[in-house]
Length: 218
Image (cartoon, rainbow, N blue to C red; front, side, top):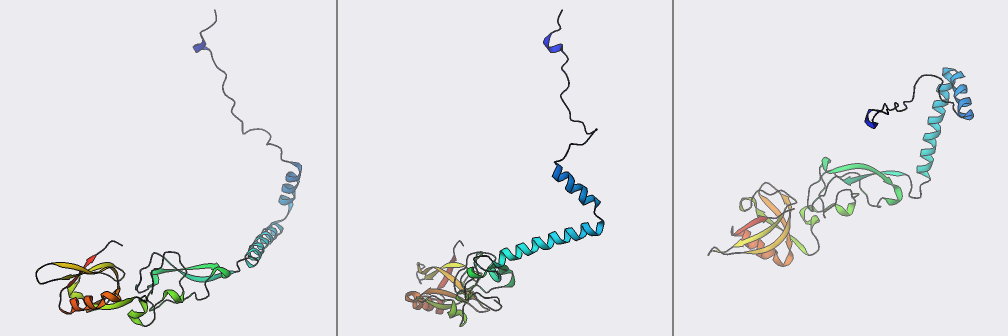
């Protein structure tokens, strides 16, 4: 009587054995390995050093013959930077770019510098990004800088964007300049960049203490 199918003893699956003769290598590789192990320690060390030197030489040659030139040190924005922001060491990162891709006015020193325009993260910093002439250096051609007493504004850092709101004596209010950047915050004043057409209204409201700011999302 034949045993049921479920009760049949199945042969074990093949498991490769680690005992016995190792697998044969190709003749060329086998001969090379024998020569390697027959060589003395000094010879093997010399061969390793020669290979490393050859690899380094090839890498340098590849860089120097690059169609974009050899690597050149640059400073890039480490994050999105706002117009009028005072640059700090942690705001920038050092990198190396191919020489032909580096702008001709790239800068390597941003100490005591302020941004004349917003700079996206990863952008190479150039002289065109940096403001000269104090607060006015961060202005566009159609803008003017107005100093607003800090006591009239909430605590806002430089680089914020705000709506400047003027209040009337009857409690009504209207936006005098919308979505404008805060260029600089000093001990007494906050400097804001507003359209030239709105500068007089903003300065007048600030002078009589009838101005405040609404902070906008970044």
